[in-house]
Amino acid sequence: VMAEALRNVLAGEWMVPMVNGEVYFTSPPLYLWFLAGVHELLAWPAFGFWIKPGTDPVALSMFVGSAISAVLLLWAVLGLARFVARFDRRGVFASGCVLLGFFLFAGAAQYAGNQLFFAALLITAQIFMYKALRYRSCMLLMGTGFFFAALAFLAGGPLGLLLPLLSAVLFAFWQGRPWRLLRKDFLLGFVFSLLPAVLWAGSIWAEGHYEV
Image (cartoon, rainbow, N blue to C red; front, side, top):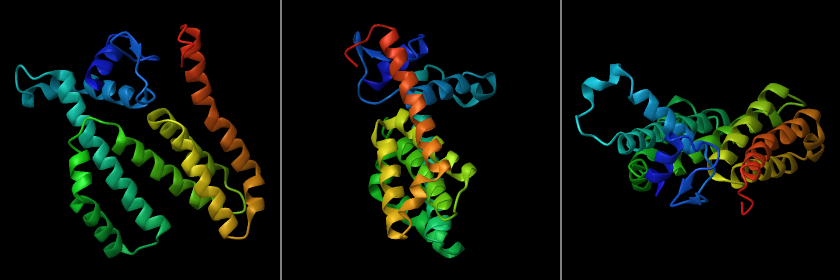
C-alpha cells in the first residue's frame, strides 16, 4: 500500500497521496516526501554502481528509508540519554546498545513504515522542549522543539504534537512552575507548530478532498 502511495507521490501527487483512487489516510505525507527524497538521491549516477540492475527503485527507496529512519531514531535515543537522563558516555553507549539489541527495533528497521521516522522526530521534539523548559525563557530551544513536533505531526498525525505538549505540561507542573507554560516562547512555539498542519489541511480542501 505504501509503495503505491509513494509511486503516486513520485508521479506528482505530493499534497494528497492517493491509493486506489482514495486518499491515503494511514499517515500524513511527510514520510512519503522523505522517501521521495531518498528515491531522487538514489537516482544519482554516483549510486548506480552498487544498485543491482533490475532492482525496483521504489522498493529500494523504502528499504533505504527504513534504514535511515533507524539511524535517526538511534541518534535521538542517544540524545535523550545524554541531554535528558544526563548519562555519562558509558551510559549513552549502553542506551544505544539496548536499543540495537531490542528485537522490535530490528524488525521495524526492516519494515516499510513510518514508525521509526515518527519516533525519531517525536523524541527530538521532547529533548529540545525539555531543555527549553529548564530556562526561564529560550525562544531558540523552544522553537526548535515545536518545529520537530510539527514535523512529527506531519509524519504521524496529531500525536506528534499532542505527546510533546503533554510531556511539557507534566514537566512544568512537576517542577512546580506551571507559569512557564505561559511564557512567550512556549505560546508562540505552539501557535507556529499548528501552521504546517493547517496549511496541509487547507491544501487538501483546496483540491476538493472534503472527506479529510
